[in-house]
Image (cartoon, each protein chain N blue to C red):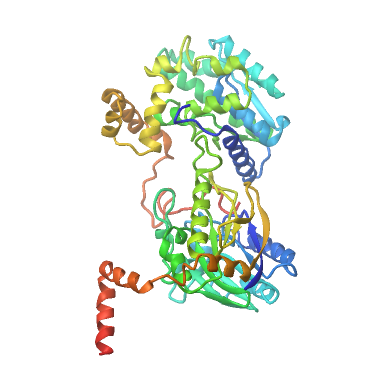
Length: 273
Length: 293
């Protein structure tokens, strides 16, 4: 039992309701999801299948020539398990068309390009399929800024964005997703051998306990230290959250007129929906 | 009192007055003949996170748009949420009460919420009173959501010998931690409603909304409690729906004979204590004392 434990059935019901209503308010009944073989996208397609029926979920595999073959295998496993049709688009020609002539070697730059190629394909397919692109970023990743802006960070709706990684795992078990997907190490699979936790330098389990207190429970850093958390680690996480705030907000518009988008033109997306 | 009540748990379209009016009329027409009063949630005619739409959907009680509701109130009393534009141009989060083809009351939300995910203080002016509704079906105390979180709101209706509190709400669904059960926000509301029924020995009708506005879900959980805090009818899911309950004076009498809290209440002591916290009050009562010397 962890303090981060949720009631998975209740959360599943809420998120299915959220998907139905918010996809519906965009005038649509179908969704497009990039299926990576990881636990987050597996949970999202499972929720979409519950919300709209498997026939209304387009699961897209987007491998690159250097991707771990296990990613595609696990993605297929999830799709079969849920009765979803998959579409596979190899992004190698698209990505290499830019990466190779430009001679880009920096893994971070290459990874960002791959993430944005995937976004480009998903948004294009959303037109053909007449479905909304659903995001798969969880609260831990979003707070840590562990995503590519306008890449995996780009989507219309996100059912997982208020759930820590620990809670996504709980939901995955409740939704009875394949064990292989739940038990493997999380990886963005943007370069060979990459795992989230090696790249971040800490585990999601460690980060979740601190982030939950900082954000959800409004602890101060001193209160966290008093509870036994290491000050250096708390400081490191806080710095990451602050440094990545730009990824969590829409672009900043310079106000010059009497009424400006983003400042004092205040309407919800669900305006008259 | 003898009041057959229908509570409508709705999912208003954000800022779409026409669509919401249509939904109101359907539910009202379905209740006419079997109910004396129908209660809708907070801002039921407009939706909740209106922001700049507050100005655009505001109505004066005289607005022709409200005529179909007024017309139907000749057959059933109607409590509904809307944005009221006052003569001075102030905009209120309001609960209108229609009966016999006219506005019997407009309660303006006193306790606007301006913290966390709420920003009502920016968009609305605050109401300044709790005025009992003397309806042909009973004595009702109207309250809007956060009003209920401030004990003196319902207390003032307790002093008025209200038969029932009519609580209209748009409470966001939040708090999914284990073990629950259910939403933390809904559990908290149930405690609040039960405590009010128990301490004020009154019927409590709670109309809450459901649905989503830009990722914020609303928690539903509409219910009717009797004056001994028993739940008489409830909607537990997150879907729109209606519930019916009969509120009668027999239950009020029994609850109040068992525990005569209103009879034994001492508002004079409270007034003296309040005067310590509100300096103007003590000045007023001193002036009052001088005038009567």
